[in-house]
Image: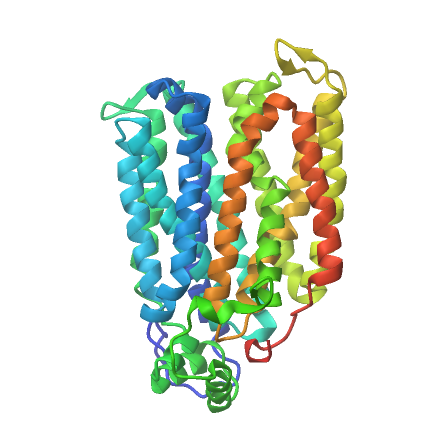
Length: 471
């Protein structure tokens, strides 16, 4: 008996599909999420060093940080149509190439402007990966485990954030500060960017070993290949599944963004649900924790090293709660988890708004005194807990499964582009909001947590256990 290779579908009549192999293939696709998290978080430890090295103003520095987010919006927008034309796997390989170019260019940047350019290029890869991974995982997964496998995307993202922050901390610990020379005449902050080379190479290599999405293969008329993939990874009545896919694809023409047009402000209602899910996921301010947390904790009195360590601990918390979501999403369901998350974020963000809003200002910074300092730390980490077990993974699962086969790649592309634009808005406005006051900033995020709760109650439908062809 031979051991099946993930990229080479085995001809078998197993009714259940190869569960272990399906998990492995989904993990490879989710490596794009790991790079997504790594690329967006690695800047955390380098922000102050980049500012010092290039003597960049706060505005220019904000643009350099946010350039990756603009690239992500562009990459997400075009990834859907590109995936429909050349396939999911090829887009993964292209994304890996963009990550490689960004890692080298950012690490060797000679000015803040070319750093921003290379960050933009890396963002293109991030955006593409953010679209392709959930779509591919949803299309390769049996319905009964699609939620858990779809959650691997968020687990990979938070793992990438954790590893990036851990690498940042280790490099600063080894060099003393991020601006000190470490190896080969390069400062520690440059090695933060160059470290992205390792996961980018792994992603590109492994992506070449996995099969193409069966729904893409059916759309291209490659029915024998689609049947082999379905038989090995999903199981069940393969011929019936192929007929269902053909029925939902509806026509032989290539899907396009125009298919998303509808009666609600120019778009289909389901597309607006995807867009608003993506926007609320960002407008609660989660990425303020991961982009600016080291700067934030330094602003209230912690050292550079201690601030990075707090951020590492927070990212570990994010991983643990994502594992909880993976274990429960196919039992509890998508909508209940979102409601739990919104409620918890409403309370914890409100606590942060209170602690920072009532803190006395000393030398232009809020001074957390007495119980307020541990209360703020506790609230920030509990905020990450509630986000990590709900809005973090569940939004990606919903985006991967809520659209029908005809518009899935395009729908995810538009929703992901909206997510990256929302991320850009939050990330670029936080420094200005911080100047107004951290209490005001977190008060605003509290408002969006409340709105997210109302939105889920009124607009989000449960998709647990449903076949993609029934959407």
